[in-house]
Length: 154
Image 1: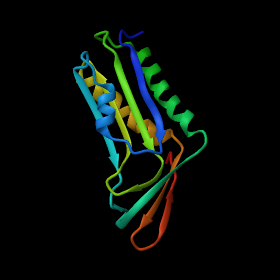
Image 2 (image 1 turned 90 degrees about the vertical axis):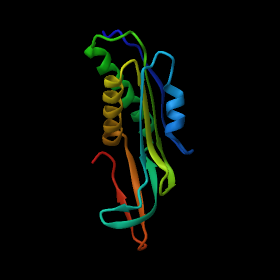
Image 3 (image 1 turned 90 degrees about the horizontal axis):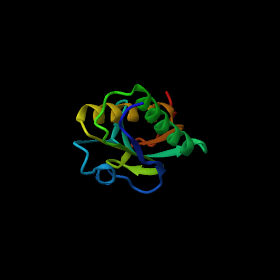
Protein backbone atom coordinates (compact mmCIF):
# COMPACT_ATOMS: atom_id res chain seq x y z
CA UNK A 1 0.00 0.00 0.00
CA UNK A 2 1.13 3.55 -0.70
CA UNK A 3 1.79 5.87 2.15
CA UNK A 4 -0.50 8.54 0.72
CA UNK A 5 -4.09 8.75 1.77
CA UNK A 6 -6.47 9.54 -1.07
CA UNK A 7 -9.42 11.74 -0.32
CA UNK A 8 -12.23 12.10 -2.84
CA UNK A 9 -13.62 15.51 -2.01
CA UNK A 10 -16.23 15.42 -4.77
CA UNK A 11 -17.14 13.26 -7.78
CA UNK A 12 -20.49 14.42 -9.10
CA UNK A 13 -22.66 15.38 -12.02
CA UNK A 14 -23.90 18.92 -11.57
CA UNK A 15 -26.90 20.77 -12.97
CA UNK A 16 -25.37 23.94 -11.51
CA UNK A 17 -22.35 25.79 -12.96
CA UNK A 18 -18.93 24.45 -11.99
CA UNK A 19 -15.55 26.17 -12.02
CA UNK A 20 -11.86 25.46 -11.65
CA UNK A 21 -11.73 28.05 -8.83
CA UNK A 22 -14.32 26.05 -6.91
CA UNK A 23 -12.40 22.81 -7.49
CA UNK A 24 -9.03 24.28 -6.51
CA UNK A 25 -10.44 25.79 -3.33
CA UNK A 26 -11.89 22.41 -2.38
CA UNK A 27 -8.62 20.45 -2.70
CA UNK A 28 -5.88 22.87 -1.68
CA UNK A 29 -4.35 22.47 1.77
CA UNK A 30 -1.25 23.40 3.73
CA UNK A 31 0.30 20.00 2.98
CA UNK A 32 -0.18 20.22 -0.79
CA UNK A 33 2.84 21.43 -2.71
CA UNK A 34 0.96 21.12 -6.00
CA UNK A 35 -2.58 21.72 -7.18
CA UNK A 36 -3.36 20.76 -10.77
CA UNK A 37 -6.71 21.60 -12.32
CA UNK A 38 -8.40 20.93 -15.64
CA UNK A 39 -11.34 22.78 -17.11
CA UNK A 40 -12.92 21.43 -20.29
CA UNK A 41 -15.01 24.26 -21.74
CA UNK A 42 -17.64 24.47 -24.47
CA UNK A 43 -16.02 25.70 -27.68
CA UNK A 44 -17.71 27.54 -30.55
CA UNK A 45 -16.89 24.98 -33.24
CA UNK A 46 -16.73 21.26 -33.91
CA UNK A 47 -15.67 19.52 -37.08
CA UNK A 48 -15.52 22.82 -38.95
CA UNK A 49 -19.08 23.85 -38.02
CA UNK A 50 -20.02 26.76 -35.76
CA UNK A 51 -21.61 25.68 -32.47
CA UNK A 52 -24.10 27.92 -30.63
CA UNK A 53 -24.55 25.88 -27.44
CA UNK A 54 -24.83 22.29 -26.29
CA UNK A 55 -26.67 20.11 -23.86
CA UNK A 56 -25.38 17.20 -21.81
CA UNK A 57 -27.68 14.31 -20.87
CA UNK A 58 -26.67 11.61 -18.40
CA UNK A 59 -27.70 7.98 -18.27
CA UNK A 60 -29.42 7.13 -14.94
CA UNK A 61 -26.31 5.15 -13.91
CA UNK A 62 -23.93 8.03 -14.69
CA UNK A 63 -23.79 9.38 -11.12
CA UNK A 64 -22.67 5.97 -9.83
CA UNK A 65 -20.25 5.46 -12.73
CA UNK A 66 -18.66 8.84 -11.97
CA UNK A 67 -18.13 7.82 -8.34
CA UNK A 68 -16.82 4.39 -9.39
CA UNK A 69 -14.35 5.81 -11.93
CA UNK A 70 -12.77 7.99 -9.25
CA UNK A 71 -12.82 5.20 -6.64
CA UNK A 72 -11.15 2.78 -9.08
CA UNK A 73 -8.44 5.29 -9.93
CA UNK A 74 -7.75 5.83 -6.22
CA UNK A 75 -7.62 2.07 -5.58
CA UNK A 76 -5.11 1.57 -8.41
CA UNK A 77 -2.94 4.47 -7.27
CA UNK A 78 -2.98 3.04 -3.76
CA UNK A 79 -2.04 -0.43 -5.02
CA UNK A 80 0.92 0.94 -6.97
CA UNK A 81 2.29 2.01 -3.62
CA UNK A 82 4.75 4.55 -4.89
CA UNK A 83 6.94 5.75 -2.06
CA UNK A 84 5.21 8.89 -1.04
CA UNK A 85 5.35 11.66 1.44
CA UNK A 86 2.43 10.44 3.49
CA UNK A 87 0.54 13.58 2.49
CA UNK A 88 -3.02 13.18 1.27
CA UNK A 89 -3.88 13.34 -2.42
CA UNK A 90 -7.21 15.14 -2.74
CA UNK A 91 -9.47 14.81 -5.77
CA UNK A 92 -12.42 16.92 -6.98
CA UNK A 93 -14.32 16.18 -10.18
CA UNK A 94 -17.61 17.35 -11.67
CA UNK A 95 -19.32 17.11 -15.04
CA UNK A 96 -22.13 19.47 -16.00
CA UNK A 97 -25.46 18.25 -17.27
CA UNK A 98 -28.10 20.37 -18.97
CA UNK A 99 -27.74 23.29 -21.38
CA UNK A 100 -24.36 25.04 -21.61
CA UNK A 101 -23.28 28.16 -23.47
CA UNK A 102 -19.96 28.78 -25.23
CA UNK A 103 -17.21 29.19 -22.64
CA UNK A 104 -19.04 27.31 -19.87
CA UNK A 105 -16.95 24.63 -18.12
CA UNK A 106 -18.36 21.17 -18.92
CA UNK A 107 -15.81 19.04 -17.04
CA UNK A 108 -13.71 20.30 -14.16
CA UNK A 109 -11.14 18.28 -12.19
CA UNK A 110 -8.61 19.27 -9.55
CA UNK A 111 -6.00 17.21 -7.73
CA UNK A 112 -3.73 18.30 -4.90
CA UNK A 113 -0.68 16.35 -3.82
CA UNK A 114 2.63 16.90 -2.07
CA UNK A 115 4.45 16.91 -5.43
CA UNK A 116 3.54 18.08 -8.93
CA UNK A 117 4.34 14.83 -10.73
CA UNK A 118 1.65 12.91 -8.93
CA UNK A 119 -0.85 15.78 -9.14
CA UNK A 120 -0.41 16.04 -12.94
CA UNK A 121 -0.54 12.26 -13.45
CA UNK A 122 -3.66 11.71 -11.36
CA UNK A 123 -5.49 14.69 -12.87
CA UNK A 124 -4.69 13.61 -16.45
CA UNK A 125 -5.78 10.02 -15.84
CA UNK A 126 -8.93 11.23 -14.10
CA UNK A 127 -10.00 13.41 -17.05
CA UNK A 128 -9.34 10.60 -19.56
CA UNK A 129 -11.34 8.04 -17.61
CA UNK A 130 -14.31 10.32 -17.00
CA UNK A 131 -14.52 11.16 -20.71
CA UNK A 132 -14.14 7.50 -21.71
CA UNK A 133 -16.36 5.80 -19.15
CA UNK A 134 -19.09 8.04 -17.76
CA UNK A 135 -22.28 7.66 -19.87
CA UNK A 136 -23.01 11.25 -20.82
CA UNK A 137 -24.24 12.31 -24.25
CA UNK A 138 -23.67 15.67 -25.86
CA UNK A 139 -26.28 17.34 -28.06
CA UNK A 140 -24.64 20.04 -30.19
CA UNK A 141 -26.70 22.90 -31.59
CA UNK A 142 -24.97 24.31 -34.66
CA UNK A 143 -25.35 27.88 -35.93
CA UNK A 144 -26.83 26.55 -39.19
CA UNK A 145 -29.77 25.08 -37.28
CA UNK A 146 -28.63 21.45 -37.37
CA UNK A 147 -28.28 19.32 -34.26
CA UNK A 148 -25.90 16.42 -33.63
CA UNK A 149 -25.77 13.86 -30.81
CA UNK A 150 -22.34 12.69 -29.73
CA UNK A 151 -22.19 9.54 -27.61
CA UNK A 152 -20.06 9.12 -24.55
CA UNK A 153 -17.36 6.52 -24.32
CA UNK A 154 -16.32 6.73 -27.92
